[in-house]
Amino acid sequence: MDSNVSKLIIRQAAGDDVHEMAELDKICFSVPWSEASFLHEVTENGLALYIVAELEGKLVGYAGIWLIAGEGHITNVAVHPDYRRRHIGEAIVSALLAEAETAGVFAETLEVRAMNSAAQGLYAKFGFKAAGIRKGYYEDNGEDAVIMWRTAAGSKEI
Image (cartoon, rainbow, N blue to C red; front, side, top):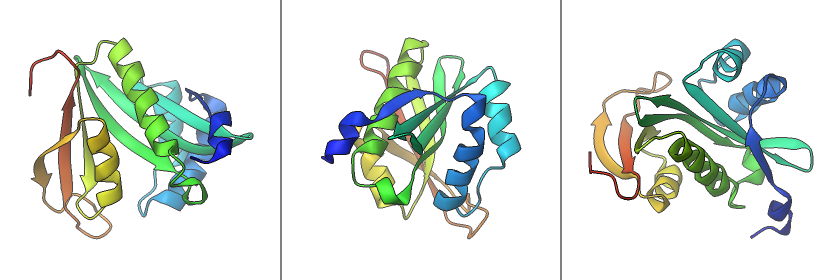
């Protein structure tokens, strides 16, 4: 593990983080969210929880989840390409799931690109399992999404 990762700060996202989150989205995704979308999610959407990861004062990752009726729908997980393979994604997902469970969530779901085996592997580390396919889900290239679900320890299977 990179020695600097011990200096990683993971905290709840705030309005001041929105610009950097949107810039990171442009780097990480072919169809990025707008700054206005992030502002709404972070400051107005009462069902949303977003966290950010900072390393030496730089926002290097973020993740979000919608908390709806005891379930969580992970919206995005992003790590700056220069900071990948340093366990930052793992730290972000771990923190996000812990916050969701504290909020009473008993199951989480997400969609991930069918070709993104690295992300699927990350989610599998946390107990997510493939549960289906959304055909043509991604608007940029029509790629399918794998639907993954995870249930919290001690809860019933979906």
